[in-house]
Length: 425
Image (cartoon, rainbow, N blue to C red):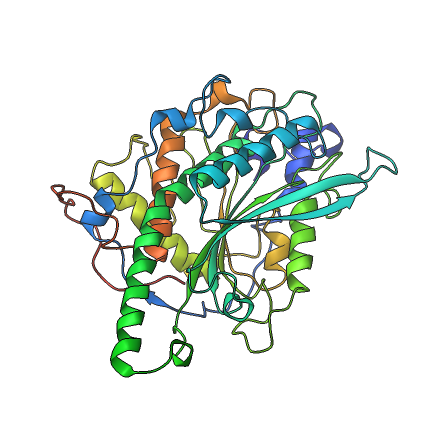
């Protein structure tokens, strides 16, 4: 697999570059193992977005992804070195907090902090700070029991950058994915508000007509929320190992596993409340190829791929790649293996969380080089990722019918799929 990424061959391991060594630790012998994989479980039917709703998925304006430092964009403030525990990291944290607190005040903001030594910092305890942004239905917010009944779609990316080489930016790794998630949150926010306001109105009408007290109402059969996790400490400080990497995600997975909800809640802890963890990494280079890595979430991958296909057929994406970003929609069961890429999802996957890993193979050519900066981003690709992911979240959160504003005058080309009931997993 390393050969496909333009790296040294494994025939002479002592001559391999540090990039090859790091990559080999992250790639787990995808073609060397066979396995018996169970079929997907937890199937849940939902309706794809209509053509009209797809047409009205918000487009991130070009200013959102302006790379110039003086711009007030989502992306530019992240395009600085942001090694954990440094001033750059603090500035980026402030950028996230300012954005959500001023533009998206209905999102609950939470920090999860930890410290750890690293192989290159001696006995010094390095701080790692994960930021969690959560949007639950308003009738749930602040109610400890009901918060444990919510099943949350969880979107994630890491915001830290490499310790070495000094001055490393990490635009695809992963400033751009963080900015994409900010755009996604803003893109679905008003739709969530409208959907939940409608649900509360119907709830009140049911209570009024039945004569029941509100607290006597039967619980929703499917309470959905959405949360964004911005991980700190994904990068290795010296070389990638199970202990020198994913500092923040390991701490968060452990914390959430040991944070029980009330006994009467639907879910036992915060890990169990994750319906799907969608991890974005290394996005922002042109012509990405995102494989489907896991059989048990291949249905979710397929839905994401269908969204890309439909948006392209509608002429709503800027790029025109030779092949789709997500080409594995029809990947057969027997092509799935036990191999995967080491990343922030692993501590969650090891605890039973379903994962959709949105990371390209091969990695972008700028990976872990000083060329991974804003100037080497393909901004149309970044904007397309924002639109694709916004549509995916809108579809998952049942926002069809609450997104459209104005007329719907775009028709899908023959072969596009919509209006049919599908399985998300």
